[in-house]
Image (cartoon, rainbow, N blue to C red; front, side):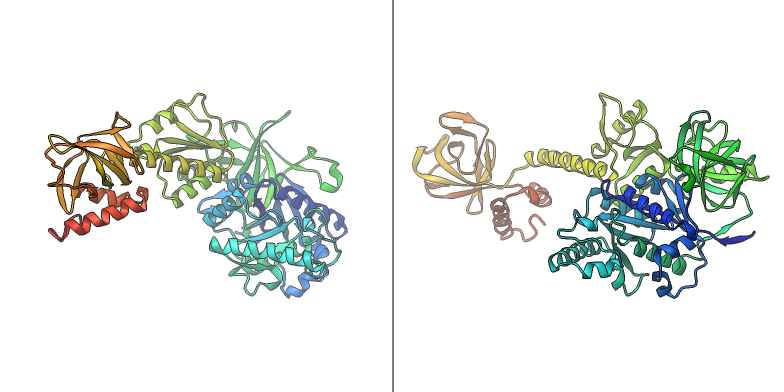
Length: 580
């Protein structure tokens, strides 16, 4: 097998409006401006910037690293966001060698920022932070030199603003388990995430961003960047499209080997592997000559790492994120390997758990990864729109807390017969589901609490004894908790009976809250013997109820907890292990 060092695959991730697309456009535009040094070639789904162009953009910055470069350049994935990143999947991880986490310097962390970090962490993908929109800092004056020098030349207020925002990013990353620092202050790039302040609008920080990425790739990733340049292709389907005149086409990233026109290929399918043959391969015309997207040139072959549009029959049911392999004479073995990779992601069990649906294999894998981290069980996981079968599977759960469908970026039936959560943001999807779970749990626990004798304290009002006995009727003020008809009460450690009925303003009621003054009636009680005016009574909570109440103490008021504590202290005078 002949190998050589391929260019690293770089993907941008981050919140929807952080400026990912503009940042890539700026990188491409800067590279085109430096085309005399090697230019830029655009492939399907990616833009290749040769090392010579990177060197021209970075100037003396790369020389300062004192690294002997062997990487041929940088390959940026054009499709920005989570879709590209999650679909760049392969068994055991992600194809992206480095990710650029784009954060709005002014706005800071947003929901999808956290989501992106969760996914990066799950796939163990190294990343740098592009703190974008530097030009929107109050009082900022664009500079033309190095970004660190540009920051130092700003007015004190602008410098302080930028430093505070970078400090905020460092703090947030620390909370999430990552050490980080501004790129020119990083002491150890293997332990700290580099933060590069930049502007996709003015271009400030772009040379530094390219320098840091190039240095990281060369220093830490050279071995993992070794690719086969002669064997059958290994790749992943980035997107599935319908192209006029071509039918269904596949945008594929080839990360190993060579893909040729006429090659037999196997693609992982939802039910069975798709075996077909490459009919045609297309790459866009060179960027400098394109004049716009959409002009493609046929090619006979592509080598790793590259993006290419594949035309082949019988690929209508292929999903994004599926593995693709070139085949020589080992069709059965390759088919088995490819399909097992797909089956690792799809879930079909009888155990309790949520039903998960997603638009692509990559996003499904990312969603499952985050659900696993949050210990949310999954009963079924597959690709495509939510169906009645999915709804029934959710309804069949023995645990009502998991009787739900989580649908990411797919259509859902309307009206849905089960609880269906749908979103285009994984973070939001899980957040809404967890909020629903919490509410459901709270309702269920409230039902349990409602069936228990809860802590209550009441005081017999002086001058309000309406009848001394048979039954005793007297006025009380409820000091703590809720008094209910049928509640057992006690005085000075002795049970005295049940509250038979309650009257509020001459109307019979089943319960009364703290602060209320009501008349109560009790059998087998004589005022002047078992109780007296001015006495305080507490509810006689049974021992089993006391144990359960301890589990739900977060739902009790401080006063109710104090009553429980008093009850336990009293009862343990007679039985030291009462309620334990």
